[in-house]
View (cartoon, rainbow, N blue to C red):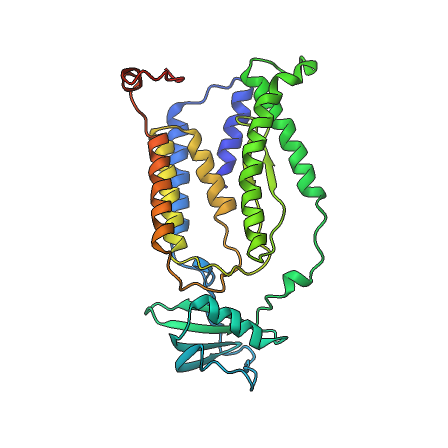
Length: 324
């Protein structure tokens, strides 16, 4: 819904309609408040990728009689709530090893183990009737949609590149080559980024789609690209909601006070990248020090790039500022 005002404003600007800056600012603030309410509001049953036990009225589930967990998980208590079995206790071995061995021992049983922490920080091993092998059994989708979106995005980014050079391709279609350097450069960046996700996921045994590019006929010519996870992830996503909230709030403030174009990316991140997907198999493992430092460095680099710096500062260092 928050993308609708942006689309309306873009269409109006294409027809040289004057829009009051106050209306634009007010709309942006309302959209930001609405998105923050949706992020920080009451949790849904799947909020934060967590699987909560269903109601007592659902069918009972039983573990295989020959399933042994004594060498993996020290059970302190057990709860049966509908179709979910929750075992509370402590890990004996690494969390990823627990998931690996439990899935192997379950065999063809249509139960999936999920390691989580409850609201009291107790470790629990859930067995839910969620067949983690279903994605592998489904036939792969035809790549024609991905190819079509890729071609459409090449067209819209070429249009945007030509527009940036002052060329209207509706009037001079033969000059489309003017926009190709911009288009090919941007598509190379997006493609390399998304294929990095794709090949990394496949290397770790996860099933993912090919990149979906998002063409738009204005501004940069695209809202980026994304891939979709089609199988359960073996990686934990602890505190993903807090990280997502911090990232979106940062984008909102940078969009309001630094560059308004970042508001578009905040909306895209919220409605596309921020969608809740399949839960992770292991949601108890914390980030190690190396990944924490890498994340902190990346965030600091982002701020260093986006925070406005006076032109005189660059000039004092002998660096040409292209935005002067």
